[in-house]
Amino acid sequence: MSERPSLPPPSVVDPEIRLQLFRGSLKEAPSLGHVLELDAFAAKAERSGGRDVIITLARAILEHDPVQLAAIHELAKDAAPYIERLLRHATDERRYDETPREADPPLGMRKFIASRPARASIERFLLDPDARVIERILKNPLLTEGDVLRIVTSPRSNGSVLRVVARSPWLARERVRRSLVLGSHTPLSTAVPILATVGGRELEEVSTSARLYDELRILADDWRAA
Image 1 (tube, one colour):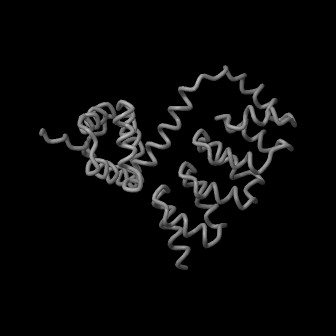
Image 2 (tube, helix red, strand yellow; image 1 turned 90 degrees about the vertical axis):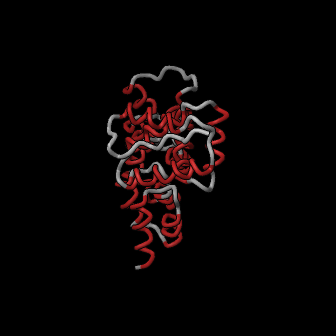
Image 3 (cartoon, rainbow, N blue to C red; image 1 turned 180 degrees about the horizontal axis):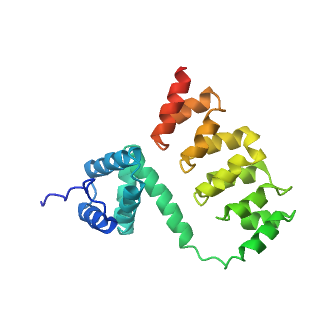
């Protein structure tokens, strides 16, 4: 059996060359050992701020046929938290991108409709990707806490949207704070100030979660020990 090509070294900065090297390392059928190697590689890249490296790795993995992609996902469960998180978010985003949708109205119209006190308006634009629309939604008098939790936990909610939620009066709700600080797609700059307001149970959950930023987990662990 031929030896599997090695993962790209840090000296490779060109994204297309890096992608080709990732593709080469993924040509053979996946094994637990290789998935663990990828997980360690992704963990190291995330700790060093190499988000572009992780994005390239995601591109290479998602190019696989569905059967092999499912095999990688299965191997990653419990054993490889970084790869499992990467696959979960990437496949959720791809599934959303491939879903046929009606053309969205212009931004100004979406903001106007989102402000109308009607449940239909909320349901239509609750997961709008533009933070300016979500800002109007959050002020809608018919919005419920359950709606806000849907925004916070949706993989379609980007960092700008989550920052708007964190700046809104809804942050006073315990479940909203908890969902934001435990959300693996919440920006670190948003999660850290919220972490300072949660209780011991949430600090323990954050410090033991492999799905969150290392910096956030270390900070939570330090505050628990204080």
